[in-house]
Amino acid sequence: MTLKGKRVAILVEDLYQDQEVWYPLYRLREAGAEGITVGTGKPEYKSKHGYPVTAAKSAEQVSAAEFDAVIVPGGYAPDILRRFPAVLRLVQEAAQQGKIIGAICHAGWVLASAGILRGKTATCFFAIKDDVVNAGATYVDREVVRDGNLITSRKPDDLPAFMRTVIESLEGRPAERGGGNGAGASRRRRQSAPSRRS
Image (cartoon, rainbow, N blue to C red; front, side, top):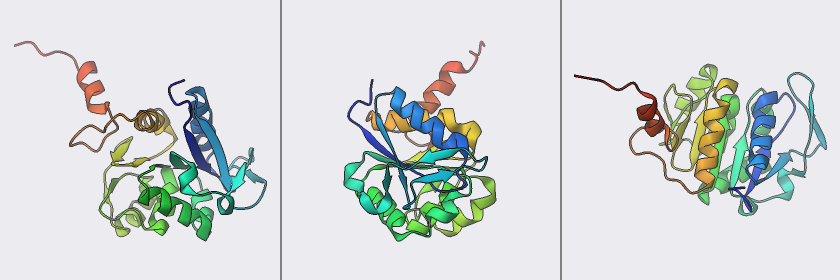
């Protein structure tokens, strides 16, 4: 239970990408953290495939000070989430307070609307690369990118690397220098690389 006492907000809205809500929620709970679904005012939201999720709180009812991290899942939900000032305020305040912000797939839309991408290195689903770049970020095509308190990934296939990096960050492990990857990523690559003999 390495994350006992940690609280993480997971933003939800209609048309969310199923795995990008449920994988982080259960992975955080498995690690001992309290994962809290935060919506925009309705009690329930349907995924892209119709699977429901209940919001424990609305963005109007919470503040960034209550959480150690905020996770923004993808799907088409981010295009709805970014229309709510309370959602943008929560993300902006979390960034200002140095809280961990995780965003995967189309979640870059929320980061762009919240104005927290300028000067950051980030990744996202390739279709919104221009939005992320136009918001002031340097785009890279990697499964996970960690730049300070910001952690981004591209798609559901990246969820293991995404959540590994989120959890490492919540544990207080520093990011690797120089690569923008999650903590330990370059070390793992070195360990798994075949040895060379001269």
